[in-house]
Amino acid sequence: MRVGDITSAIEAFAPLSIQESWDNSGLIVGSHFQEVHGVLVGFDCTPALVEEAVSCGADMIITHHPLIYGGIKRISPDDPTGLALIMAISNGISVYAAHTTADKVIGGVSGTMAERLGLKDVRVLDEETEGIGLGAVGELERPMDSKEFISFVKSRFGLRIARCSYPIGIPVSRVAMCGGSGSSLIGKAVESGAQAYICGDISYHHFFTPKDFMLIDIGHFEGEVEICRVLFTLLRKKFPTFAVRTSEKLESANPVHYY
Image (tube, rainbow, N blue to C red; front, side, top):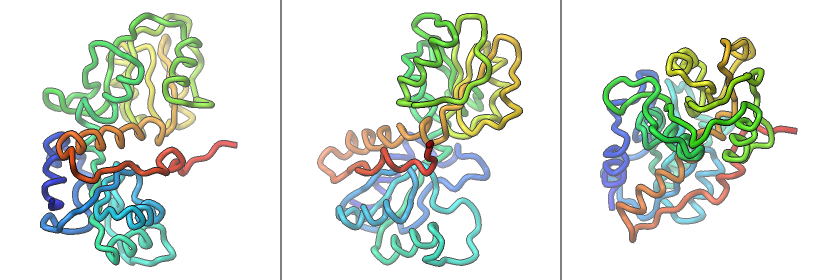
């Protein structure tokens, strides 16, 4: 198996051509012609994830977030990115990221959020071309009052807390969502007719919402982490006898902690 075989399978699902202009999805470390004997799927390419790959014999890492976003001026073991790069290169480990590519297909990040909520008639929220774009919107199986809906969201995403705007006084039946940082799509969520919008990284002023519309910030990691299962399942289906595994430390990989 070569790196190119793995990347081709991922890109058939989430093509590099659809990534955002600022993004760095794709092969970040390594060559498409490099031989691969095992793949480890994780969320962020941290030194701990590279160490796990070394310990389990994986020579390719696939993550959602890219290890490198923009230019890099120096590579130092004193910096987490630099250390991860040094460890990956010195151990011959290729690193690939499916970031906004996986955000913009309906079977990716936002579509998986909709699946967790059991939504019907799911479509892309901010559609660029047919079936491609950021976010998703769909219908609940049954309308819920806003406080019941907040509890429902917390249970489905395994949350202890959620940051919410003031609960609305009408039932929630249509829900919009975007994994990760989603404030740029608040307007699209309102336009879609949704009563609630779920995303992460919402700033204070965005919580002043229009009438009959509410925001729920579930966290960046919490909204996106399920993409690791999607990528793992995709590769296992395509290569059923190949060594593909998900990080054993995935549930504790969130860098944000609540006390």
